[in-house]
Image 1 (cartoon, rainbow, N blue to C red):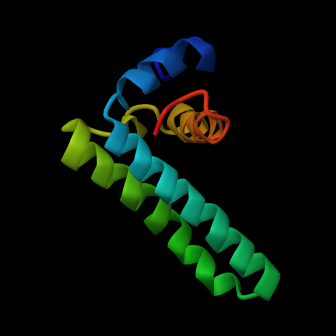
Image 2 (tube, rainbow, N blue to C red):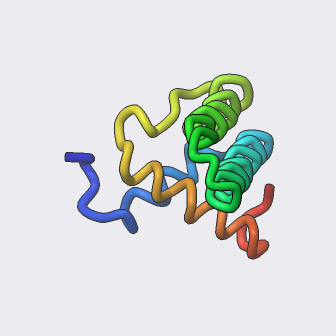
Length: 100
């Protein structure tokens, strides 16, 4: 159990863990690479590239946390809500609703 009754309750906490602009940028880079890798693998039918997905996604995000936020990623305590939070935050950055 995550300690949160819903994602709506979790998301404000998630955003508070991503207050540093450069951390959000690292998340954005990692998520963009995940999309690019999945598209590359699907379009080329070279599924072996998919092993890079967690490396790109988590690698950039965790680097942002350890270097800029100086905190431990929420993934370790709230893995599913954190994954959803990554993509909600990504969408908000794409739409200009959250700075990066």
